[in-house]
Length: 75
Image 1 (tube, one colour):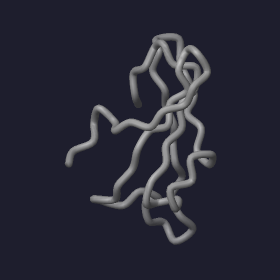
Image 2 (tube, helix red, strand yellow):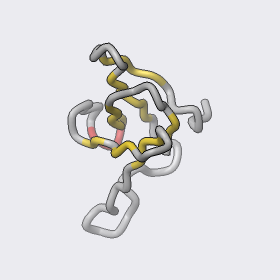
Image 3 (cartoon, one colour):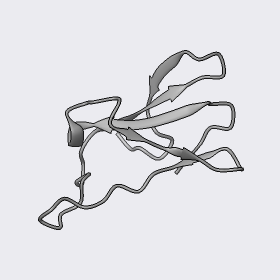
Image 4 (cartoon, helix red, strand yellow):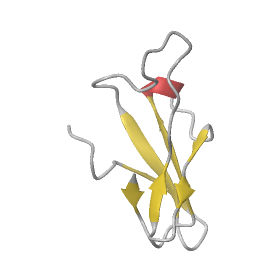
């Protein structure tokens, strides 16, 4: 979950999907939080494994897209 009330849209991308910005769209709730649930892989392992890198692709209020680190990501 990522809070970004002024954004129109949000996607998550990273090592786990070959940095494809268009694959995983997040849903915005009434409080400005974007959420997504990524199902496990066919073998039952998590789609995003421990220590994999990821970013968030945000559509701003003006329609422009930008990448940023998640507020919850640690370096």
